[in-house]
Length: 260
Image 1 (cartoon, one colour):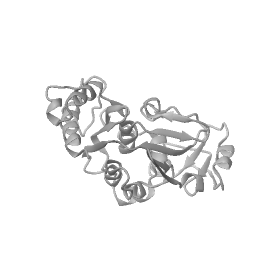
Image 2 (tube, one colour):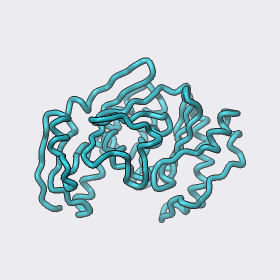
Image 3 (cartoon, one colour):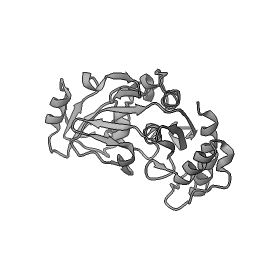
C-alpha cells in the first residue's frame, strides 16, 4: 500500500473543497472496493477523504412518491427499510455481512462495478442521483465499466427512489464473492415497465424488448421467445456470454414472479 494523507471533513462542502481538482484524491465511504485496490496497489491516491460519517450523507427522507436515501447509508440499513420491498431484498442479498454493514449506497454507485446490485435497483426504478451540485437521472448516470456521469470532484449526496407499483429482483450469485453473475430488476412504475440487468455487461443496462412485452402482459410467459444478443456480454471463468444471455431470460421471469 502506498502512503497517503487521510482527511475527515465535517461537512459535504468541506469534503468537496478538499477534493478539488486533484485526480489523485479519492473519497472514502465504506471502502469495500477502494481498500482492496489500495492493498493490491491497483490504486494509489495521494489523499483519502473520509465521508462515511457526514450528516448530509446519512439522511433518510420518506415522501409521498417514494424514498430519498443518503449516500452513506449502508447496504444493511437499506435492507432494513420496508418502503420498497424489492429494494430492501436486493440490499439484503449483497455480498456478505461485512460488506452489507460497511459498504454504502453512494460508494457502490460511484464505483459502478459491472456486477453492482444497487445499480440494477437505481436503473430499474428510474431513480435520481442527487450530488452536491445537480440531479442525474438513472438513465444518464451509468456510462460504462467503472464509469459514470460524475465529475471527478462530484459527490453523491442521496438517491431518490420512486415507489413502484410493483417490483422484483432475481440473481445468480457468485458463490465466492456474492456478486451477481447476472441480476435482473423488474419494476412497474408510473412511467411504465423497466427491466434492468447487472452482471452481464460492462455496466447495468435496460432491455426495451422485455419492457415492451411486459407492458402488454405482465406475466413471466410474456418473455418466452425473447433473447438477449451475446455481443458485448461478459465472458469469464464464471460464465460464458451465451450462458449469461440465457440467465437474463430466466431471471427476468423470476423477477416478474417476485413483483409485489
